[in-house]
Amino acid sequence: MAHESKPRSGGPSHPNVTQDRLLRLVLEQAERHALILLDENGVIVSWLMGAPHMFGNDHAQMVGRTIDCLFTPEDRSRGVPAAELATAARHGLAEGDRWMVRNDGIRFWANGFMESIRGADGTLLGFSKVLRDRTDLRGQIETLANRADALAADERRQVLLFGTLAHEVRTPLGSIANAVELIDMLYPDDAKLAQVSQFIARQTKYISSLIEDLLEHVRVQAGKIVLKTQRIDIGTVINASLETAAAATREQRVEVLLPSVPIVVEADAARLQQVFVKLAANAATFSNRGATIWIKGTTEGDEAVVRVQDEGRGISPDLLPHVFELFSQAEAASDERCAGMGLGLALVKEYVALHGGSVQVRSEGIGRGSEFIVRLPLTRKALP
Image 1 (cartoon, rainbow, N blue to C red):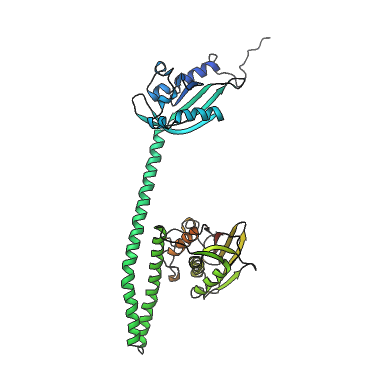
Image 2 (image 1 turned 120 degrees about the vertical axis):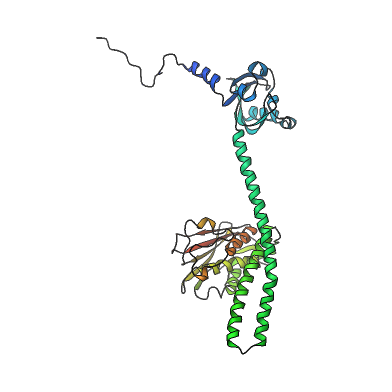
C-alpha cells in the first residue's frame, strides 16, 4: 500500500527556494548594507546590495575605480584607504567608523569593516567591504556631546558664581565676627547679651566654615590646588584628625584600629587630615549619642585603606549614588545636626582624587549605619 510522502521537518517550505536564490535575493534587496568586492590592489570589482542606494552610483560607474573614491579628501590625504587595505591584508580584518562621500558630494557617517579574501593556498585574492549608513547615530552622538559640553560650561559658570558669592559674603561675615568680639569686650558683665553674642559667634563660625569649603571646592575645580606632599604615616594623620574633630565626636565613642607598622603614603598632610576630619564629623552627625565610630587602617595590595564605620541612620539606596555630589543632603534631615549643604563629602572625594586615590560608601539602608572607604596609593619608601 502506497503512503503519501510528507516533507521532512526543517525542509524548504517552498520548492523553488534554494540557497543560491536566497543569496541572489539578499544581494538584490538588502539596501541597508553596502557590499563592495575589491581585487588585491583595492580596485572595485563588484558593487552589491545597498551600495548603489547608499552612494548614488550604479555598478557600471564604480567597477574599475579604486576604493579611495569613497573616502573624504581629508582621509585620502592621510592615507586612510591604503592603511585600511594594509591592515586587512595583514590581520584579516580592518574596522572603522568614518565619514564617506556620495556621488553628489554629500557626506554620511558609515560604520563597517573590510576583510581579506584568500585562496586555499593562502594567496591574497581581494577584499570585501561591508558598510552601513549610521548618520542618524552620529547625529545622536554629536547631540549628546553638545549637551555634555553645555552642561560642563554651565557647571563652570556655577563654580565661578559660587566663588564670587563666597568672596562677597566672607567680608561682611568677618565684620560681624569682629562686632561680636567688640560687644563682649564692652559689656563683659551682661549675661543676656553674652548669650546672644555666643549664639551669633557660633552661627558665624559655622557659616565661615561653609564658605571656606565652598572656596576650596572652587579652587579644586579651577585646578588651583597644589599639593605639598611628603611621605607620612597615615596613622599619624588619623590621630591628628580626631583631635581636630573632637568637638563633633564628643557624644560618640571613637575606636581606632591601626597596624603596628606605619602605613606610608605620599600626601599633603593638611588636606588628607581634612578628609578624615570630615568623615569623622559626618559619622558623628548621623550617629546617636553613645554610639561607636570605628576607624580602621590597613593595606590591601599596593593601597592604603581606611574605613570609617558608624552605627548611625544609614543611607537609602536612592541617595547612595549621590552622596559625594555637591550640595547632596540626606533626606528627612529634620534633626538640626543633620542640616548642611553637602560640601564636606564632595571635598573628601576631590581631595582623595587629587592624591590619586578613591573613596566609596556602603550602607545597607536607613537605620543600618554606613561605611566610607578611602584608598590611597602606598609608597614603598621608608619615612625620613
